[in-house]
Amino acid sequence: MNQYDVYGIGNALVDTEYEVDDTFLDHAKLPKGIMTLIEEEDRKRITRLLEQEYTQGAVKQSGGGSAANTMVIVSQLGSQAFYSCKVAADSTGDFFVKDLSDAGVDTNLSDDREQGATGQCIAMVTPDAERTMTTCLGITNFLSPRELNPQALKTSSYLYIEGYLVSSSTGFQAAVEAQEIALTSGVPVSLTLSDPAMVENFKSNYDQLLNKGIDLLFCNHDEARLLTGADSVEDCVTALKEICKTFIITCGKDGSVAFDGQDLVTGTGVPAKAVDTTGAGDIFAGAFLHCLCQGLGFSEANQLANKFAAKLVTRFGARLTQEEVEALLK
Image 1 (cartoon, rainbow, N blue to C red):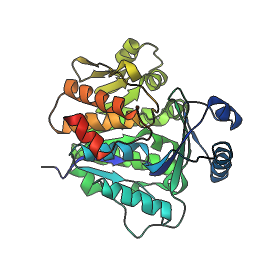
Image 2: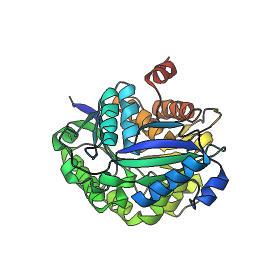
Image 3: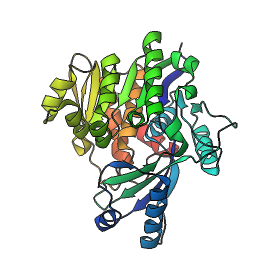
């Protein structure tokens, strides 16, 4: 029997979320709807602009990072999760460690952490519920194979790799090594493409991971188009069948399309009044993986994952509370 259901690896970030309008994004010179990597100087500049323009302050601050969000929902649903990441010996890092511990997620982190600055993400949500993010990686930019726990990985049902790791040379090395450990140990490898900008700018790194072997790929339609060069969902499905064993393409309010290795499974979108799409893909992946780890098929997993993602977008923040999770399971 495996010790963990899902072993995740990704960038550890603390998220700060603001409600903004399109004019602010233009003023701050930020491309709408994608994640932009920034340095500390730019983070301070954008924070100053936000504090000047929106004196009511942030809507929410919470532990974040794409794969961390996924591991939290895996744990909330009752599966066992382990998360490898890197945070600094600062107050932001302390906040992140406690946040994951409270969620029941085991990690590689200890009290003996390096000096530096823990990564931070500013998420700006416009009235159309679209989220624009800027990420200052801080010490997580130096995530490396040293942060892996091979024993925990070898005794997991799935490895889950966050696509944002392709932007860092050491982070990508960690992803490659984790994939190698999983493949040699018979642990299925799942990968999320994470963001269209990542696929556009680091496609060769994604190709390397895919060529070595990906058992389960998570992506949205935009990411699938950039990865395959196809356009329609149908054409993306055809192309992805040649790239990985199984996959899911999420299509927002229109639900999702999954391929289980033999059949296509359509997940119907759940009606929801979206106010914030931050973390919807993370929650979808976590709910889907939980179902597979509990022996359910792609049809049931698709249904539950769409249900949880639809709930998340109706409120601000990238995570659900335990009470919200339990209510959805009734």
